[in-house]
Amino acid sequence: MTRRYPIDVCQTDSQDAVSRQITWHEVPIKLNLQTDKAALKRSLAEQLKAQDAVLVAHYYTDPDIQDLALETGGCVGDSLEMARFGQEHRASTVLVAGVGFMAESAKILSPEKRVLAVHDEATCSLDLGCAPEDFKQFCEAHPDREIVVYANTSAAVKAQADWVVTSSIALDIVRHLHAQGKKILWAPDRHLGSYIQKQTGADMLLWQGSCLVHDEFKADGLTALMSEYPDAQVLVHPESPASVVALADVVGSTTQLLRAAIKHPADTFIVATDQGILHAMRQQAPGKTFLAAPTAGESATCKSCAYCPWMALNSLDALHERLKQPGPGIQVDAALREGARRSLQRMMDFAAAQQNTLRVSADLAEHSKQFQDVGAA
Ligand code: 13P
Ligand code: SF4
Image (cartoon, rainbow, N blue to C red; front, side):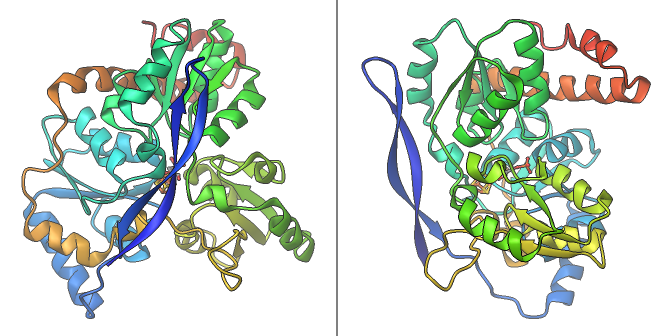
């Protein structure tokens, strides 16, 4: 069984301007075969150990998958943390519970490891809406710009980029490039791009993609909920539309939103991102109340439908199927691998330098001095 979802696909015209088109994509409905969850989890933990595999999960996946990852020594994180954890872990197999670009990035960063995706059909609307050939034309029309792409893209798009960024580090990297006087070509998420453009003042030309989950958050519904809960803090992922981001107390990656939920003294939070993250928020900030921000929904009865259909494919049953028949795992075309690795590793190096700097000094001048040579072409 499948369901259909609309995807923003971009096209460049004869003036090299980029415009939005809508196309449709079929997504399988998640399997639900096993009923004895505890026994299944025990068996999965044993199989992970037997196959020397570590489970690296995103916050949007099934709560059982998140718990299993933590119980078996894996991790639950945002895209950047998942990439870092998979690269640094000693296991010979990295099992990625997330979407395709996350597994592909893990393979690019660790070509010597076997990298498995829990579900082969878990992709992302941003990735689907940024075809490598169309993106090539866009880049060729603007050769004076530094090419910065969001991690939610294929290896073929990353291979054309100077930098890869995730939502947790995009602001810092663009600020760094802007300070060097660079003009930026950005893809694919137009909302994240325009948020970064506003925050940094950088000259950014934006691809017109969007995330089908975050695109659904609506400012009027959110305003109504905020007036019901006037003391609530509003946590928003920057893939959301600008009118929603404008209402936020905190804008950030999934991990940054989780940290805010833990640290902020408020006891109620309205959360505008995939509802999968509410599991980690409720576990790590017990006693606090978390409300899902309203979306347009699919019908009048749906108040918040913020679930990524591809992340939802990462069930315990799908993991069981994968471990039964793991196969050779993700393969990345050799012709693309080096280019994609370069732009991804640049981000990893920048993030590592940033962490070191923050540890050593909180002084901002010192901070930007240390970044000067990171990622130099
Ligand atoms: P994060 O890197 O913030 O976890 O975001 C990934 C993603 O796909 C959000 O929709
Ligand atoms: Fe892609 Fe949106 Fe799903 Fe994240 S939530 S993986 S951006 S479709």
